View 1 (cartoon, rainbow, N blue to C red):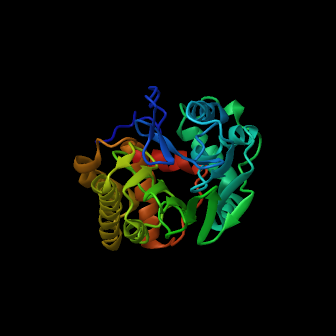
View 2: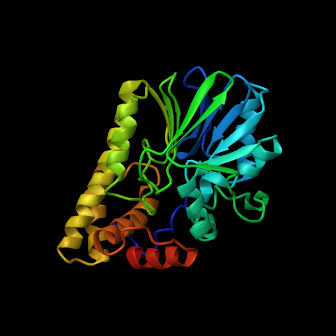
View 3: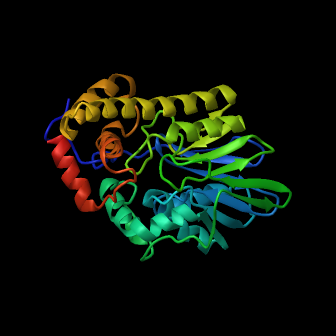
Length: 323
């Protein structure tokens, strides 16, 4: 299944993706690109909110261009659904448009303090196509200007927008953007569709319950972290189900191997073989699996919290598991 020539992470993924920008409810839009990281857009009565910025200001410029095709309202808010560089380093483009606030959970802020620089270097190495214009990223990190814990409500005129922490999953700081009046959710990477969840910073035992908490909101439209926008309650439920199934399947396989005393290499080989028939067609499956299994193995053995990924640790792990 694996060969020594397997390219690291997404270094072989150089093909341009087709972008779709579509309205999914009265005030919500989805910017998607065939499995690349998505951006959610809320156009309120008097301002615009953007959730997840794209990897660089150069890539964010395309989001802004498409927003400007449908509204001239100011882009006032940027929401970081979590701290990963591929989601947040485009923020300066929106600030140049007059953005006033970068919003995140306090847990996300704490993760940036602890590991933001390491994550930035790590992700730039993993995603050469997404960071092709990395020189447009200002020096330093993207820092929130306002943080919250649990819940924060914004009013874009008369439009109610809730920022919610519904539990740990993809990271400990995950935030969703919820339009209660339209049953529309921007999930960040808590939900994926036709794309493999990255779980290198995850809490495997918590994630399914967090998805259950999303389901209790009964969203009828959802912008996942990757993959097409989900429209209608049935599609949303499918997105929640397949994400939950993947996380549970990885965890079950890894936990069984760890409990049996097998080492990480053996557990990786077994888990890859078990999951590939069901999930192997998903975007970035081969990229994510070494990171996902490593984190699950850590959680099943001696590390309840994710260890920091550095560019050096990335390469060392990849060489160990992939040849």
